[in-house]
Image 1 (cartoon, rainbow, N blue to C red):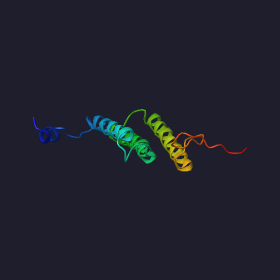
Image 2 (cartoon, rainbow, N blue to C red):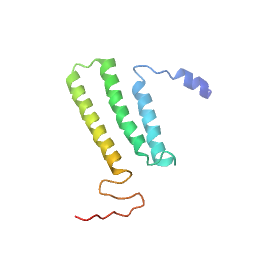
Image 3 (tube, rainbow, N blue to C red):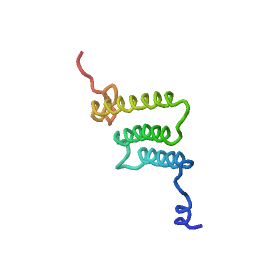
Image 4 (tube, rainbow, N blue to C red):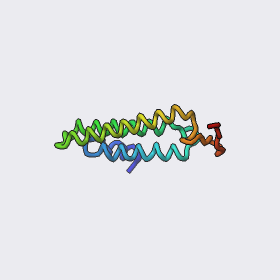
Length: 111
């Protein structure tokens, strides 16, 4: 089987969307760890965090679960996590939570 035939036979549907999302997320995560232009980029992790919220919304819309309120609560929690992570990333300007710089030294402030 050729690659083009394999790609054309792999169709995106409601039943296979989760597998495609998982594969794409795994690929982006692997790129985040190993590919130099993407490696360590906070925006990539923030995009992955937002994509999970989008996936939850699409799941609610497509599947119409009986426990819709529980899924909406899960969505709100995920969005709050995304907002918190994004604000920490923006405020830190490339630094860790306690001020660690990328090269490992700790910035010591007064107070």
